[in-house]
Length: 258
Ligand SMILES: NC(=O)c1ccc[n+]([C@@H]2O[C@H](COP(=O)([O-])OP(=O)(O)OC[C@H]3O[C@@H](n4cnc5c(N)ncnc54)[C@H](O)[C@@H]3O)[C@@H](O)[C@H]2O)c1
Image (cartoon, rainbow, N blue to C red):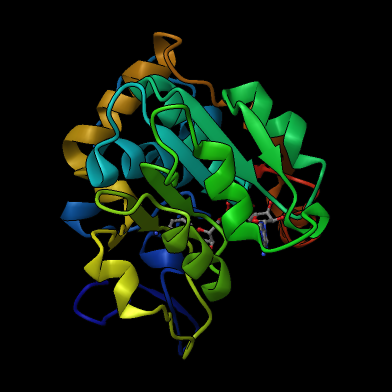
């Protein structure tokens, strides 16, 4: 709980609320700020994903970056977060959506949600950043760079690449990925002095109480997709299989049904 206490115990042992919510139990105690009321006809086994990944990805585009129609964007890491950034970019009307992932299986996934170009850094002959910047050049713009980039990997080297792939003068780079404890980001200050902006976002800058019900409505109206990203379901007893699939890059999201 926000005050450091717990409402769960097993015998004399204190148990902690998983991710502050303990949604893997039939009954839980939640901080009031963690609760949002959603429409009753929304299927729980699908809209549960709005509790983190969907809202984080779409919110990073709409609330944090405030992407405008016609933008050029690069998304690093096409997992459960990156794919939602892509569908947020499509919703916002971005023209060019470049997806970057070291796993070629993610190309088809990105295309399904609106990605227009795919780059596997392992298959780029030289440096990744100039390669990406070149892709964004157009007749009128020979400097190049994306209007918006998003790190959805949690890798600090990728975070730097994302910033440096932004357009000089106005490019905005949003860090969504959570880096390992103790890791630090770096770049040359010149990258920022010349007008790039480095930002971070938690839960896509969403206001849970009002934005979660709104995104549930978008799903129910068919504006956004969730079902195809739920690649696996399993009973609570097999929850560890869900973690294994995630670590192996074989699932986008697994939902525990109980
Ligand atoms: N800020 C927030 O509120 C928030 C919320 C949820 C998740 N996250 C974080 O977002 C990140 C992504 O989460 P996810 O569920 O999509 O993870 P995921 O494991 O499903 O996806 C990560 C993707 O990045 C790719 N990748 C790994 N290294 C790469 C590299 N060097 N270059 C390019 N691609 C690379 C992987 O192949 C994979 O497709 C995690 O760090 C997670 O902790 C942040």
